[in-house]
View 1 (cartoon, rainbow, N blue to C red):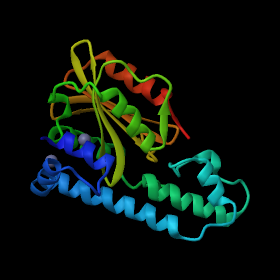
View 2: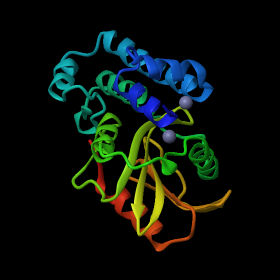
View 3: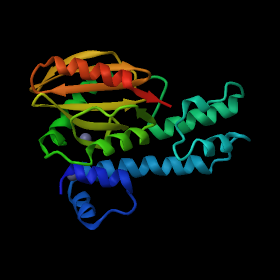
View 4: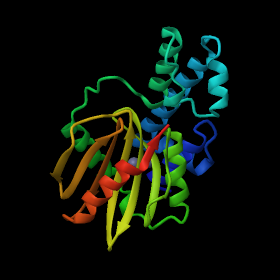
Length: 232
Ligand SMILES: [Zn+2]
Ligand SMILES: [Zn+2]
């Protein structure tokens, strides 16, 4: 049992954890904190769902299926409905119009998270590609073609935001990937605690790729991911 597996179980059903996972979460401070954050986020979504919404909005959300974060459903007229949609969007992905976390602070937390949630050190998981897609969907995104070489993918919380944390193997090097919707920040290069990487914001989301040696694959991957993920 490790933190990555615990995080995956938390993503699937935080209310009913299998016993070994619940044991881990009760003994691991990091996972306990993430479990509390995920439950809080889920509770807020449930609370918002009970708030009376403007006429018509319910139907639009129903048509959209279980994921309320659908930008194209934002009504173009009607302030109240727009406000309700924005509230829902904010609650689901922690979206806010102006982020107070700077690019270098994001990089700091990503490097710190990479060190303590060392998914790149785990053996490849055959279900990783499906996990990658599932976590992206939960975050309100989708990708036409899942990148090759994914060894791990999970849902993590960074700076209070839901994030996809994945590992992709390219030419023998394992690259750590973060995809965080609802965060637009300055693009930057990083060299920190033995990690080199690049952070890129596009389409209102931030994508970062970190590696343990400088490698042109880092830039290629961050750009292709930023272009390939579609936010609905
Ligand atoms: Zn843990
Ligand atoms: Zn993680």
